[in-house]
Image (cartoon, rainbow, N blue to C red; front, side, top):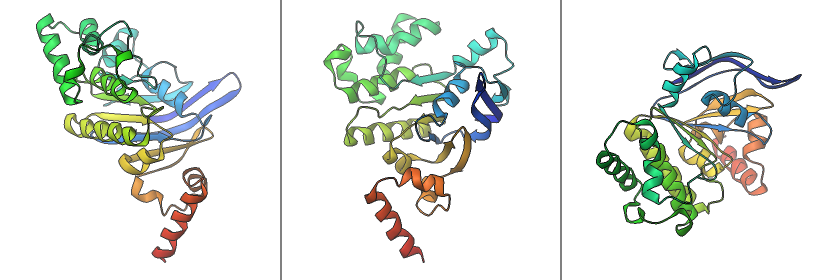
Length: 255
């Protein structure tokens, strides 16, 4: 579990994050949503230590990440898995070598055990047959699955995903969503997903934090969204005419 307590982040005189307090739960897909410029990317960067908050606390299972020494932070980072928007694979390495990379860097496993672990992770994302291919030889969806396999190679307690469905078609996006959701359950990971994908929000949003102009405007589950009374959230989620009609129909039925 990750707890945020009164988190603020400013750049000069501009307040980007404003007194955010929330909890990201174990074994659930925790989603951060919000308009571009709302502060959700800055929030995730504060969580993983790419930025230092101006004030407030970030607790990893009770351990205050903000006040830790550099050495202590490295220990926590080894418990993290990261999936980047672009997959961020190494073009000159095979799929297997990409998945082995964190094992090579941070584990004391033998080469044989590192290969075995990497293959286990590739099997988990249904990509064992692609282990000798290079990233340029596989599809964008397969690249994202390789990124997931690499992210779970070290058995992380915390998994951070920055727009994991970016650039993918709707069908492939659903595959990635289901994979992230099932892995979260299987390993009881605290998974945090920064997303604009409303299919992800409605499909796997077990704990959703809506950021509006730097503060936490709303928090809840996907099942709570359709009937929400929060107008800012409704305006964001149901921006298209089709979605507005769907919501209006739902609200009429609920009367």
